[in-house]
Amino acid sequence: METRYIFVTGGVVSSLGKGIISSSIARLLLSRGFNVTIQKFDPYINIDPGTLNPYEHGECYVTVDGHEADLDLGHYERFTNIKTTRANNITTGRVYQSVIDKERRGDYLGKTVQIIPHITDEIKRNVKLLGSTGKYDFVITEIGGTVGDIESLPFLEAVRQLKWEMGNRCACVHLTYVPFIRAAKELKTKPTQHSVKQLQQAGIQPDVLVLRTEQIIPPAMCRKVALFCNVSPDAVVQSVDAPTIYEVPLMMHEQGLDKIILDKTNTPYQGEPDLAKWNKFLDHMRGAKESVKIGLVGKYVELQDAYKSIDESLLQACTYHDHKLDLRYIGAERLTDGNVEEQLRDLDGVIVAPGFGQRGTEGKYVALKWCREHDMPTFGICLGMQCMVIEFARNVLGMHEANSIEMDPHTPYNVIDLMEEQKSITNMGGTMRLGAYACHLREGSKVAKAYGKLDIEERHRHRFEFNDDFRAQFEAAGMQCVGENPGTKLVEVVELPDKKWYIGTQYHPEYSSTVLSPHPLFMDFIRAAIENKNTK
Ligand code: GLN
Image 1: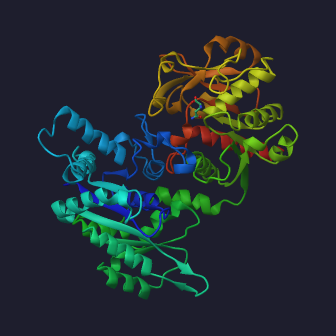
Image 2: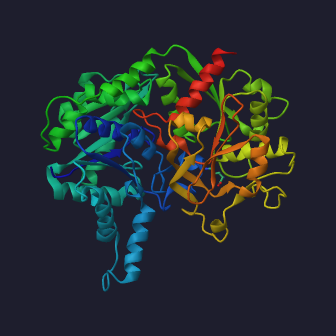
Image 3: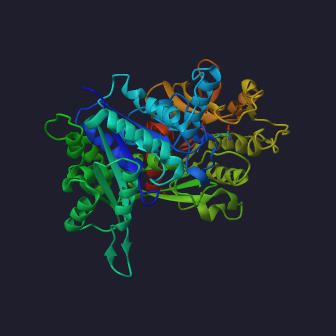
């Protein structure tokens, strides 16, 4: 089948959940047996979001091939089990970089290089890149930002041209917001009408409208939107606030969104999507009565997107253990020896978050000391693992000034150190140890039991590493290095075998936990937390 292209645009306001709608469409098409891929185009000038802090853009996700990506790629993977790559996430910066490189090489010799056609052609080339591999029936492209933004214009122009060139092999799904005005007790469709007008001004007629709303929109109002926006009435669907994002594919299917897209793109199909496994996951979720309390110790307590993949991995693991997740963010900066007990005492398990820089690290050591001494199931991820190592060095090995050289370049006990090949690096963007690396686990270790195998591959995003010079001292005192890179021998996992569950991973398992394949380490951590709760 010739590849079909679906574009997902957004209007009125941002944060409506374009990523969730795009992922839901991908889930439904996959469940109908189509080959699907999904990509995000972001209109900002950064080459990738790796240099953005979480206040700007939430969590930075990492693909297997080592691309620092928008967090929507995390949703794509969690909904679809597709492994995305750097080809699935393009920014304005990448587009310009490539055009400017071509210009310098002389590829456009004699021509004036312009936004149209050169930038738009480069966007179109990228849209079609995955489609041209012949592997996919559908390429879903989410356009970041909101219709009407100056920076989105070249992307919309590229979509207009592609729709014109490919006709009904393309469909545009436009997501807008229908606010409920509380004082008037009314839903309002005017912002949607304006947003569609703006899209039409850019030359794009949306084929499907998804209306985000907090209250159910009556059918007559949907028909009115259809009439004003030149969209067929059956192609106006609504996305009401759901108890969980994982309900959205079902809500979209109930309103026929998958069929509408197949019809609009002239795609033959039969029957209904097979959503049995998806429904089973939701049945676990709906049936869960008991909850498990997990504390996430990190520095971004007030930002709900900063630890997105960890939150979702925990939720997936709890769900498969038929428990609700009761997640508490614990501000690392405010933790002291005086208040740690009251903050952690009631929890069933603790996660110490990844991160960069000094802020909050001293509080992480306080938390880890308390967890270690009180045998709390504890999971350290990346910086969290490095903090486990530093806390152990300080309080068990008696190296009181132990540190990572990221925090203290002059520490006499550099238990976390910079890799040799990192020492000459001056550029910050894309230069960490990134992407999937192999790891060999020690037979008989807790971590090997959790995975049920000895050879694994996990994604990394860090510059600093466990310093091998100290390995023997740690092992003699009880902290075991139970996972290492088979080639470089870098330490990837540490654990305290005599504790209920005290494991730190230099890699990020949270990037590869999905709804249909929850991550074994999160599954085992939650198992231990539930056991801890039940034996208290
Ligand atoms: N800052 C640490 C490093 O660069 C850990 C990074 C992380 O937690 N992702 O090594």
